[in-house]
Amino acid sequence: MRSGTVAVIGKANAGKSTLINVLVGEKVAITSPKPQTTRDRILGILNRERGQIVFADTPGVYKQRNELTGLMMRTTENTSKDVDVILFVHDGHSGVDESDIALMKKYAALKIPMLIAYTKIDIMPEERIPADVKTLFEAGVTADVYPVSARKGKNLKKLEEAIFAALPEGEPLFPEGIISDKSERFMISEIMREKILLKYDKEIPHGVAVVVNTFEERDDGVVEVNLDIVCEKQNHKAILIGKQGKALKEAASFARQDMEKFLGKKVFLTTYVKVREDWRDRGGMLRELGYGKDEE
Image 1 (tube, rainbow, N blue to C red):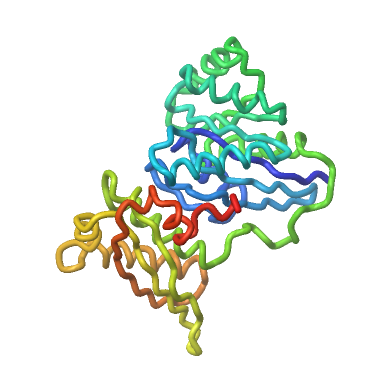
Image 2: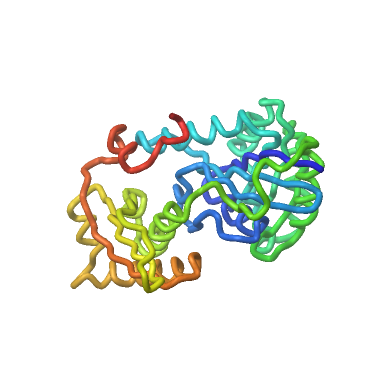
């Protein structure tokens, strides 16, 4: 039996969370086409007869812009150094450039077994794949490359087999039936944030945090959720709420539907929008909002 941890690393929007969700077979991480979707390290656990793969989804790699993104990058760096395998996820649709090669070499230098998942092959010309693989090889990237499509399920079995082959022999790290290390409360807050990422444009979603104040099941079986949507500016609050509260009602309605699907129960959702000026650059406020716990 083989079991171990796999750090899933790559640039923002490479498809890391989508890939993990499909491999695990359950939604353990939110997804959106916007950078900074993943802010925490989230474990997704795949159980097979042959063993267990514990995927650690990490924030996308990009330049630090504030204290929050700095914290996210530290999470990615710390995770990459304490695993059995690194799965570097590369957006094949975007091609290969020098920054991609430099990033791959950086993680390969850790001397941890590394595989490359070359994603989104369903939306790109197939003939480009061997050319990109050749470019990587000639640049000194020696890790095996697995062209995959998470959305179409292409080559995922081959990737899974390669990951198991790279893991050490050992017993499962988590009991069977566990698919994530995150609580239902955490996932409820992430579902709300996902809908904000999908609904609102530009900078507003990146300046939003979600805090769950109440998460409890009533006697009638309905789960009561009361949460705060925290933003940085008064004008952002107005945009989030929208004219006569329409925008917020729509986002909350979509979120509630996904919460009910996730929990398998009816949800009564109450949302409030609060302003915390420049919270992304304030260490104390970040901790208050739940960020940075993995560093403690």
